[in-house]
Each structure stands twice: as structure tokens, then as C-alpha cells.
Length: 356
Image 1 (cartoon, helix red, strand yellow):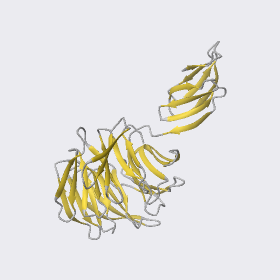
Image 2 (cartoon, helix red, strand yellow):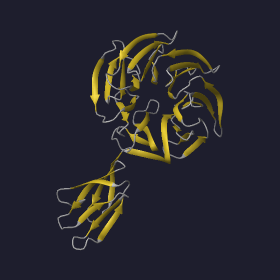
Image 3 (spheres, rainbow, N blue to C red):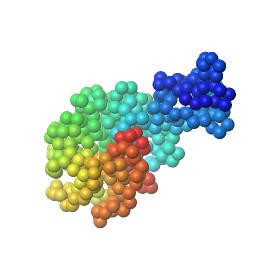
Image 4 (cartoon, helix red, strand yellow):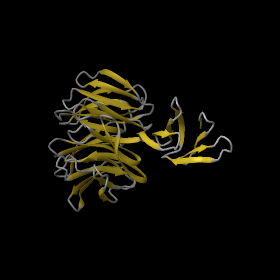
């Protein structure tokens, strides 16, 4: 609610209505609709315009006379589950949350595209290496692919995983997609121009698959699961190569730069280095003093990596020394995912409070 100098009253209602009421009889003079219920109004010094914030994380610049609303800024209003950059392109990135996927301009932080699927939650997201589609996994068990410029649905794979798709990645030739589900299955899909068929279903995990990574040669993939195991798979014979066990719920797994080691993290707050040859643990670091570590990202050269989790801090590590070089504080909720921009200049983090 706000009072104009002439005595008129500006009122925001929970259904997204903004109204101006006359000072004498409180009759509605003019009203407008915005996305989300108005939660704050701030008038400019001359009261000719105002900034209006809403419950769906939108900020509007509104003319006080006719209540014409112009969207100035926006973000997700629920937890953000994943983030992805296109291959070797740092100008845009995509994030996913409840109800939608959004594509952002990384330079001016403006929203470029919003893809909405009502009443569903997008758990994971990725770009195909050729940049021609955004692939995503949803809690209704479907994999959906969208065109990155128009947001049009390219294809949907129904019943990809029971109870939800939780991890997704595209192979380097863009003709294969690997997905993980809540029940622990890892599935490989062959993506054609008209059809999408399942090549293999590998069921060894007994818990949710949180992360999938593919090596540079496209012949091995590693998956991290909440059952306390990380499995390296052969993508030609569709069999298990190595299994890593730890008494933790693994949240993230990464290859280092030369793919001789794996980096994992999870609910035990530890960051662990593993040898990819024999699956032995090489080194263990304390990733956090309080709260689990949810996310890791590594630089292209492999000299540094970044971690984040429930302690709401972004930690920048030296890979070889295993020490924290810098800490960043900005989130007011748990950090869910981290990504380096392909030009290695920026780190983008997304959190449970809906912040980027």
C-alpha cells in the first residue's frame, strides 16, 4: 500500500491486481494486472512512478497515473535445481526450477527466454553440444527437449524414469542422451530426427542418481548416487567398469582435466579425490564445517575447483594444494549447483532460495 501526494491510495492484492483508489470514496479509479501478488511499493521522489515488487520475484516500473507496468527485473521464485552453459559459449546460460526453465543473458543478467510447464518441477538441465536443443528432466518422469531460441518443444520422451528424471547430459556428438532417475536407473537414449529410442538401461544404483559426467572420448560415463556409490560405465558394452563406495550420499562427481582422477562430494561434507584406474581414494578434504556440500565445478585446466552447499558459501580451491584460496558469501539459502562459464571468467551459482 502507498499514498500518493493527491491523497489517492495505491493497493496491491494477492491475486496480482494493482489498483488506485480515490481519496474521497475509495472507488477504484484504475487497475492493472501483474505476475504474482504485489509485496512492496516504492514511489519515486516526485511520485510520478513507482517500483513494484511481487511474490513471483518480478520488479515492475509503474506509471502512477495510468498504472502501466513495465517489467524491469525478474528471477525464479522457488528453489533452482540446475544450471547449464552451452558448449564454448559464455554469453548465455540456462537455469531450471519449479514450473519453468529460463535462459539468461550472462552479461546484463536479463531474462531472454522462459519455457513454462505448469505444475511440474524441472530437476536437471543441459545443452546439447551442437547448441540446437535444451534437454531437461522433470519430476513427471519425462525428458523434454526445447529449441533454445523459441522455447518450442522439440520432443518429449514419456516414462523415461519412474517418479522423475534427476540427472541428464548429452554425449559430445549430440545423438545420445544419458539420464538418471530417482530409483537409480541410468539410461542411454539414441536421439534421431524423428525418434528417440532407449539403447540401454543400467540398474546398479539403489538410490537417486544426482550427477552424470561423460569423458572426452565419449566411451565412459560416471554417475553419482545417494546410495553411497559412484559407478564408471563403459558406454560401448553398457557395463560397469569401476565402483567407488563411501558412507555418504554422493551429490556430485567430476573428471579432472586429464581424466586420471575423479572429484566427488556429498552429505558427509568431504571432497574426495579418486584414482580412475583402480577406484581408490587418494585424498579427502573437509569441504565444509556445517552442512553437506552439494555442488562442485572445476576449471578447464584443472588447476582450481569451486564448491558450495548448505553453509551458503562459495569456496574457491587450489586443486593440487587442496586449500581454500577465496570464499564468496551471497546466498541466503543452500547452494544447489555451480558452473564455470566456458571462457573461465565467471562462476555462476544457484540456490534453494531462488537466487542466481
